[in-house]
Image (tube, rainbow, N blue to C red):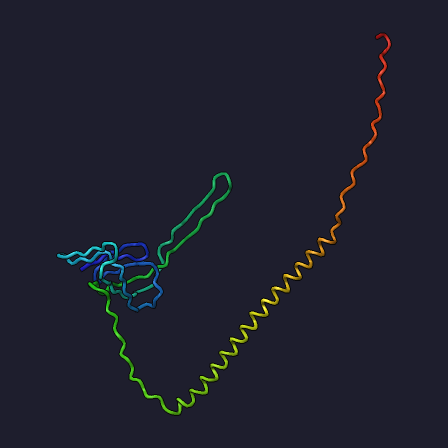
Length: 199
């Protein structure tokens, strides 16, 4: 049985026993992960293909190691500008060992419920004063929060009043005199040129 699953924008064809490299999964080495976005599952005779939503199947895998991909060199330059830059990038990968490819969603193991113990009467008697004290502390904290909000509102009003007062003083202090117009200069007549001799 094989499956085609999608993970991190890539598609992988997997079967039991295969090893694949996928984008980094934040889990410890040795833990088991379930990949549920299966696009196709087939076993020779039957093939189920996803139509709009993933197939009802899951792939169980064990985390073998965390690795880094090969280095990719990125070189950029701008002609005639003396701009040259080389960058390196290595992708963070996780190596998975495929344990099982199965139809249907992976069944989560239900945890066994622990038997409940009857509360001791002494513990119940001690719990009541503690609860009352907790309620009193919560009420006090709420009152302090309300007082803080009122104080902040008063501070904001006071700051606005100070700003308005400063603006008014600055407006009054600026002189509102206009520049006097420059006096017009009297024009002096130009002397007339006398005709030269022999004209």
